Length: 128
Image (cartoon, rainbow, N blue to C red; front, side):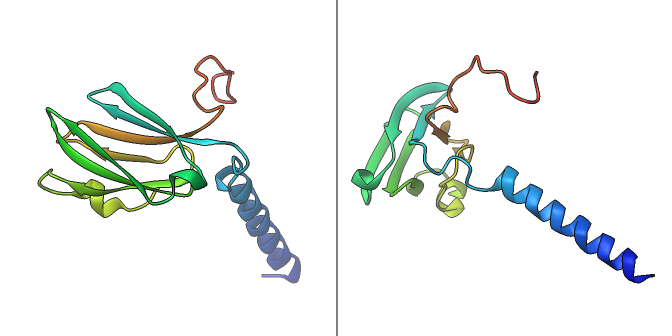
């Protein structure tokens, strides 16, 4: 392997890492985050995240079960649940748009979206 082969390999790796940073990085940092809480596929509550929600809790009691959510600054997690496996509690914090917590026995879905993520009619790079 020559010196230029090594330079080319390093260059390709750096370009790949730079591409990952831009696609997976915190692109929506300056946008308002919302926690969409759905039960059985229907909207239960939409909560704007921010400093005012820090350390606040929300109890979600439905005919399917009980979950208790804890909010931090721009993040959310499930801290209590009456489901048998408690996978939603073990998942921990979510803080980036597109991240989801799911509790299947209680039919609960918590999804983080940014202020322009919930626009359904936008053309994205995949469907264009």
